[in-house]
Image (cartoon, rainbow, N blue to C red):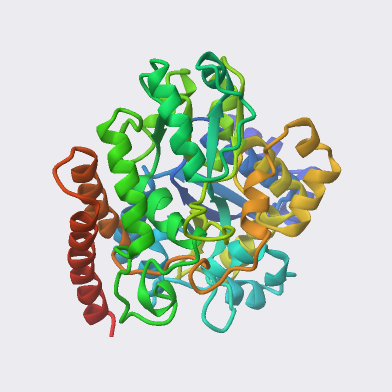
Length: 440
């Protein structure tokens, strides 16, 4: 009897009638796998929480799956097992791999069209959009965290060496002279770098409007070959090799190991992503600023544009129509001017849309934080060319590993620049041929 009365108390009456007549609809789950930890992971979590709290139809569940390479591999493995997420973050060098993954990817433009979502690919800034679009201009993945390399300057370290902190550092010729003075003044780390291949070969090539690879850097077809051993690249790596030999350039590692040294105040100059802003601002106890990436005045009259790093969001095949509607809603949310402006201001990543850049300017952020617009100007002053649109090369993560090995040989004095770059081309081309054969 007690059980009967309890059930009646729970189910009988007008309240129960309402519940039975109008059951609460279940939210559609959208799985999002990403590669962010630390402060960036916290900011992504906040974006997801905001989206989930602003509507009741969908719930995004974000999961960290390791670094960029690990996240890509996890996504591929999950697809093979039929357990893929709805959205997968993939770093920019994985673009060709994702494009070649037949049946695994649903292009963003299709997701948006089929979901009836408002979507304008022209709203995204050209240098960002071009990296993730097909040859006929259709957006394949959504740009999310896009960055570009800049020169970070420890103004206190320059002043300590009796160098005017406002000295012109727009050219590598001027940087070389400053490194001489810093070394003579006793600096143990005049310059360091992060992501050596991305900055000192991939972006160096684009910035000087010279090809990194044939076939428009791979955009024109899989039958591309590396061209990273040309005169400009060889001259730059030769100079850096000499700086390394003389203790003016200190190599710290293949990823961003040098960041800790710069943030600690140990290094005067640092070539790194614009997205280093969040960490440098939080940790640096010295006066710092961001400058444009230097160029060689002996090679070009003026620089072209740098190319992006970071990652984009790919939508995976095999999901329901309702999930894709949730994906479209979330991607539109992430692209909104307000969300993108805040992301740009919090992280140093580029605002991926013109509206987000305009809103940031209107909010006075650039005026209050001088130099934070350097990356935007560097990317948007000139329209991208075939040499500066970006790279689309198969097996590029592995090719970067080869480049890292060869550059490390130069920094150690074991190889000259030309020999190392010729070897990187030969070894990298072998991987490109295998990728081409596997994806014909």
